[in-house]
Amino acid sequence: MREKLYQLSIELTNGKWTSKMFKGFATSHLSRKLILSYAKQFKINLEEVSKPIEDFSSLHDFFIRELKAGVHQIDLDHKSVVSPVDAVIEDLGTIHAGKPVVVKGRNYRIEEMLGSREMAERYLGGTYIVFYLSPSDYHRIHAPVSGEITYKSTLGRKSFPVNQMGMKFGKDPLSKNYRQISEIRTENNHVGVVKVGAMVINTIARTHTSDHLVKGEEMAYFSFGSTVVLLFEKDKFTLEAGIKAPYPIRMGSKVGSF
Image (cartoon, rainbow, N blue to C red; front, side, top):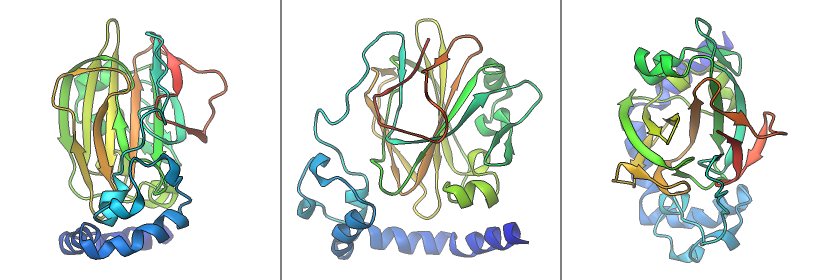
């Protein structure tokens, strides 16, 4: 019953017009008045932000803020894989053939998440890592590895929240929400990158136009709420020692190695 009530409440408040109204306000000059209280509420470190808080034109402008050069240190070892975002690693594990990935008690099939059985087969027996970005986090997404983008796809329309309630009671947000999928080919490996939108504005804006990526380079940004899932091939990736969910991590920090 609790799950059904949650899903109904989201359906009623996550429609086309409510999302349009929220987006209109969040991107308006009027929303500037909320920036400071937002920063205080979520304990955002303003010393890291690229410009003074009064220079942001709207709440949305602040949400997609850039940070000062040097805030993120990118692990440059050519075999390392780095976190694409500032986030908490909420879940991780092995992708078993014929079995769903279980995140927060919900079952997900990789082929449904990716929208491609052929692509999903590449990652069977491999590793998945789920990164959750809270409202306090920097919401730009960066390349976890250097390589060529060989596949792009956009799936889904509406979105459930991707916080703990959304992951527990939502309609399978990792495989049903609006999402962008990229596959990066490195020298000897493939890495799947699933960027999952969240309710209300539900936007993922690409900022990188080339098919070539350098590790740490910006790829896109989220507009309000988000999750990133990384997928690795079998026997190609080793998780960094000491990482266990939940695990806070910064963009550029090492999550493992090829």
